[in-house]
Amino acid sequence: MVEGWRNGFREATNSKPLFVTIYATVIIGVLVSSFYVFSAIYSPTNGSTSWLSSPPLSTAERLHKLPQENATSQLQVAPPPPEALPPPSPEEEAKGKSLGKIWVSPPKDKKMPPLEAFKLTKELFGERVKDNVIIVTFGNYAFMDFILTWVKHLTDLDLSNILVGAMDTKLLEALYWKGVPVFDMGSHMSTVDVGWGSPTFHKMGREKVILIDSVLPFGYELLMCDTDMVWLKNPLPYLARYPDADVLTSSDQVVPTVVDDSLDIWQQVGAAYNIGIFHWRPTESAKKLAKEWKDILLADDKVWDQNGFNEIVRRQIGPSVDGDSGLFYAYDGNLKVGILPASIFCSGHTYFVQAMYQQLRLEPYALHTTFQYAGTEGKRHRLREGMVFFDPPEYYDAPGGFISFKPSIPKSLLLDGNHTVESHFTLVNHQMKQIRSALAIASLLNRTLVMPPIWCRLDRLWFGHPGTLVGSMTRQPFICPLDHVFEVNIMLKEMPEEEFGPGIGIREYSFLDNPSLPKHVKESWLDVQLCQGCEASNITSSSGALKFPKRSNEDTFKAIFSSFNDVKVIKFSSVEDAFTGFSDKGREERFRRRVKRYVGIWCCEENKTPGHIYYDMYWDEKPGWKPVPPQTPEEDHPPL
Image (cartoon, rainbow, N blue to C red; front, side):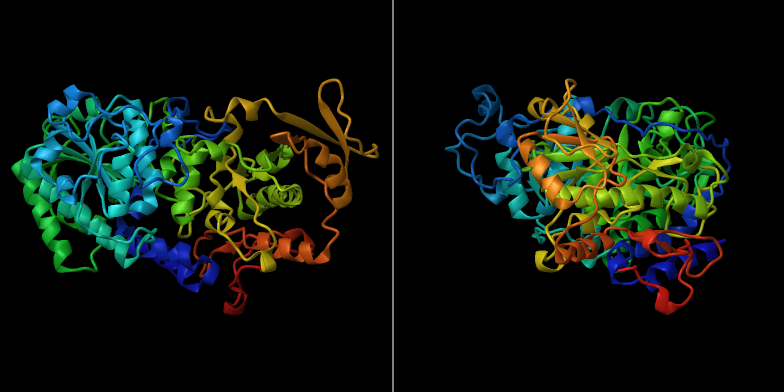
């Protein structure tokens, strides 16, 4: 069975430069922890269901905007402007609460305290502890927006016992001036995105372990979180249900072991324990584990922090602590561990692909953006699709406005026949052709495209599989995340305009449903209905709709829609056969060069090396095109 994983890794190594970044970020961790996840795929299951559904929606209504002065896209390191929220009250200052209230910026005339004031100490942590619990994340300046999102969700849940560890001075200063409780981790890291799997990424993992080992002796319970996750429900009452647990950890489990909100059945969890969300109590067993884990990582810089945790915790596993709590003994035979249910402490797979919580009629507590394929940009886009990412106001009011369209998908492509590689590509290609047309129109009109939801018949993974993970609750077809088909990181990357034409902004498919969309954008709307043989006109009907002829050229588009430059959202009833192409052949070629790079791969057919298949933005221009893996090494490259 492990051979299937090996084949998946050969996929990564055989892929060409466009995909090197994606595979480099997953290959190291997946290689070592593959046994755990593979076991999970074939662990006992309660069966699966299959039906059409809408995409999983989130508790986005809770994600209200921050005060605008605290929500700039250029995150200020300087003191806030005079109109910022008032400073902490004299009573708070008198009590020594130097961190103040969350989101309350320090007075503009107050100097930045010395770095020593932010040093990790028991006293600093004690200022934020409530009921002996502290909730912590950490990161560098590149993840500032993730950190603000993480904090915002917790404060919306009325939780204030939080702290953020700053790995660089720029982040520390920025958070301080925004009124976010922060401490200095003394890492002095780079302020840029370090990339999953890089040496600096592994250094960040070691900093986490050092942090846990340092905090547990303070005597506080520690809920440790990665920055690429969000809290959707207050987890503290849930964690308090298991007072005897030394460690409660999330996992990469993709097959449900329970159908309620109890802990996952540890005997059935074969996937890796995921250290992106885990809760520690300051017991002697937990402190012993943290110290040994730290010592192992510091002794060998090739050990990934999560794999090191799994190896020592699983050194001895079982028996159960009792008959019904779900806790079990691990590590040295004394450590009591519980595995948080993957249905409600969600991975990127159980939330976005399976919507497991939705099918089981449960309320999710957390969402961690694992199981995705486009690096940091992909994580951000996933959270935006779920309407749980905090963006500044200008994100919802892009210059030039937006266009969207209603995809046209025949029922037969969604529901008829078996779910095969061929039927999957037929469905996706049909949608891709429409997206290609919409991208061209967006580029022509200088508007940002709201991507449509994309329906898929098959899941995407890093290894060969039969279409979905056996035992999972993945429904077919399902609305798949954008990074299953498109290279989100490439779509958002700046490319030389002289080679690839002007950039094309995109937004997530849920964008127009987001409660953060301002009223003046919601109310500025033009419906465009394509018609056959009608006259081009900028006169709308009594209902406010605009009739627009199919197969219009560039001049017609510009002439008609220039009258609607002030309209924020232009929505097409369809984009099939809407646009005949750019009149400037040079621009047409640059556009083609750009969008060819937007699409990724599907992975992977079972028992084939290589087993991945490249999507092709211009598949319809190649007679006889079929979805098959590369047949020779020379064919193994994106269709650029």
